Length: 458
Picture 1 (cartoon, rainbow, N blue to C red):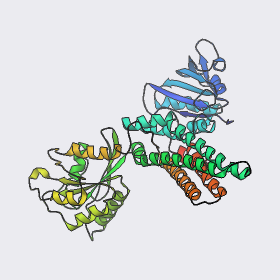
Picture 2 (picture 1 turned 30 degrees about the vertical axis):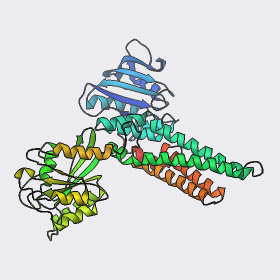
Picture 3 (picture 1 turned 90 degrees about the vertical axis):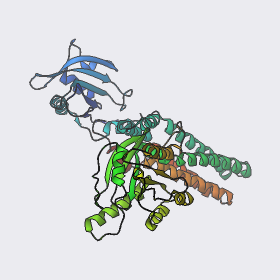
Picture 4 (picture 1 turned 30 degrees about the horizontal axis):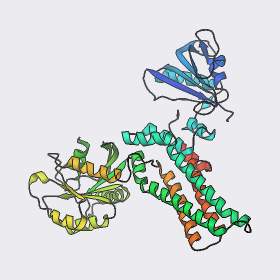
């Protein structure tokens, strides 16, 4: 429990119906008691937990009324942070909320840091670290699917699965530790076989969740879909068509797009970050060359690559080279300008070399646009059924990957007949990684990095 009391405005800045000033800490009730006069003559310090009352916010120096507000008292440990929490619901507006907050600072509170309320909830044992990350995911969700998954993590479903794995690792450790501590009383072969069975089961479950990780990360941050191709093949026109509005400049002049243009959208419940890029070609023009390099970099980092082909031109050798280089990625060949009727792109060659990962579209008529969106959507949703629990951050995936690798190492050393001490070290390494995931063992640097992404009032 912290000794200092923090305060912040928990609602967005600007004009609105209500603004909420939140206090948390040992002195939050006492500070509110000094700055609030309840209508019925009661004192804030006498309010029971989880009760509300109407009162005036007064200047402690002049006694002047700042605003009329509703006061909500939540005493620890049954509060969001696990500490005494007071929420002052005043009228919306930047000035009045700031005056209420600054009054609390004059009476002993200090400004909260970004995410400090949620950080205190974690440090006080109210939530796990993965649940704290889910709070941010809920706030920033841009689609129904991302909100659904974030809500499940916030309820602790993913954390419960990780806890089950931790228990399994503890059981495996017990099976291996017994023959080490009591070699004369325990048959090591039977214990080894049971430990092997248990570790194999845990490894398969972890691998199953890891196979769905791309979808979990995509739902949290959005699927990056990058449009690339030679100049003037219709990338910017398609970019606009996929957004249903004119965002990128479209001309007949090659090299119009010089930088990566990014826009967020949603396709069938899947959050998408759509990227338009410069045309891929050798060039001596300095600015365009920088754009080409950025296009290559964007494609390298994207979740899905849409390689654009112009249906009024035949396939070029460089088209095959680019498509071949991305064959092991989520890459779709998109044939544009089909409304012009030329049909010079040989789809039989695409079928032969790249299977069914191609689609024909027209940015003018809209033909094939929905098919393309469905293809991208299907690539990701096929990674997981709708009821699967998914990790929500790269940090969680990293912890899970390290745990899975350690379990694989433990199985390898068991099969190769290494001493139990070596296998035990691998299992302990796996357990350590899972404890980092839920926050049971985590560095201050990691905590600072996670909570710095939050807004000040959360």
